[in-house]
Image (cartoon, rainbow, N blue to C red; front, top):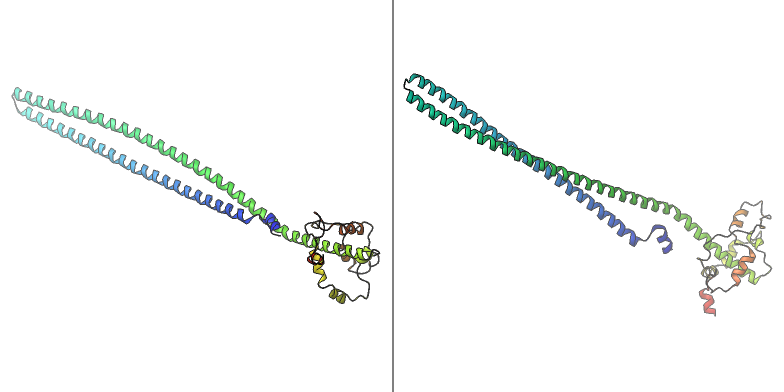
Length: 305
């Protein structure tokens, strides 16, 4: 019976490790998915911080440019004041000296503005290149993360389909168990009936199996007859090889329950009878101890020997 159950439901020693392995793989999948999501959030946060830093640097450059414009405006105002003072002064030498000073300051300011502009352009180019590279790296990382997620999702779907197939197989085999048990009971009953009929045939060679299969004679006290069989039923049951009888036999084609057609239980008695008298008498009269025999020696027979 244990072997039959293992064939129907599978060995529990192998099923539990498979379920545990499947559970571990699912946990690993969700852990990896969580790790990928955390890395993605970190990359987004790093990008936001980097953009804010660039914004701060650009604001600084804008402030520097504003200060330069203010300096130019202030210088222009000073030049205008100098021009007014020069206009008031009649001496050419003083005016020439002031002009030279202003020109020197103007050249110095132009040089400073040029250097500032070149430095600003260089920093902007560096920041732009750095930003492009970082955006490219982030896009590549996101692409790899998406590919990993798709791969894990595909594996998860395959495992879910496999688990669903296993569940369907278990449910399908569960439905066949009652039929197998019923078939086993019927086969065992056939074996006992065949052994009893073969034994009776050996003791009473003139016995007709068809008459016996149609039931007891009318007026027979079946309760008393059953009482006399108590104890002997175990002897016959112990001699039956159940593995040999786990198959189906049919009645001979010539058999018909013509005598009891009017009785309601006639068909059931014919179905519960064993095979033909020739086949089953040969099986019961053979070597009971040989391999493939329909019967097994009981404890009472061994003790009597």
